[in-house]
Length: 390
Image 1 (cartoon, rainbow, N blue to C red):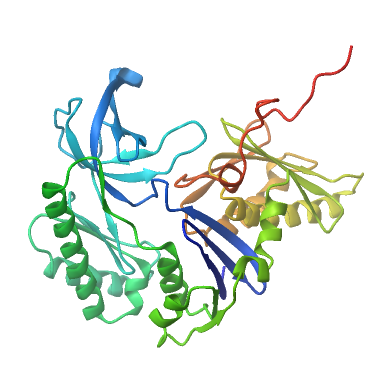
Image 2 (spheres, rainbow, N blue to C red; image 1 turned 30 degrees about the vertical axis):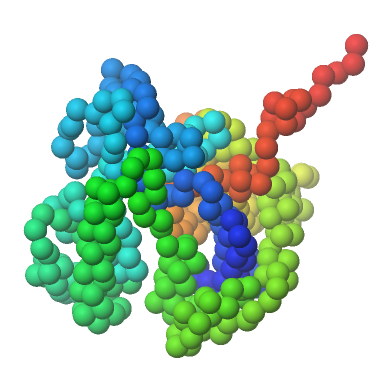
């Protein structure tokens, strides 16, 4: 996916970001500054200890403004410590609040840069698997290892393969200094409090697609952003209401509907449930094998777009129209895999189940568009149905 335009709508507490390719909106992100945003680091206070599955311990942590989030006692890469109620702990939001589940926290904090990720509680160096050049991978590994100070870990991002080595070294230094400042603040502040606010997501998007060479234009109501990237070669257009001007509000309204019409005459039905996301492809009419295959291929392309647009996550099951035999579904699996390969959020097409359903798993980091923009109906409690008359 080659994103060529970013729409950035900045308001007091709510920020909207839309990614566009050739005039088509592919991804929408709504960020509420009053919520625990994925990547933020807090000095929290443990309020309650609970037992989870297999007799493991978990903790509810107050991270400020009476917001509680959940922390597992066991965590990969962290030495076990005895945590008790009332204790303060430095934590990072791994997953934002979802439905009735509170945000998830980790103690193993990470700081994400444009070219590297700083992992102060790890001791290994990894390079993005998307860098195919083995010589470049070896060069980056040596570069990072030469600039390690003490016990720390690093993940080299794909974009690092396209910049000068000094840029990577400078970012390593900046991230290390940021973490030192976080630790110093944690020693002086009183819990609960915010120690580190993740930079506005628009910076990551701009840097990511600028490094890919696809980004041409940013449409925004924030002149400071235009000044920040004045020498980037990217065109900035300042408008009062970017989402309204670019039709993003209209696309969001369509994305809140259950049904997505297809040009071929069929439709996709998307149901978000607590257990999974169910997607059904309906031909809406009798279709022969050839036209049914074309309909399913069109549906597969649209499903990839809808997954990103609606930020669907967790377990996703798809029931394509017609035959559920593997020989018919295999081309559709290829379309889904190829489309999701460009998804910044980690996702995987599991394959075809014995029941004939295509299974997809996508990492959940923030709520879906439906959760952000709507509330469950208090009358029907989300079932969307009414009782029949006598």
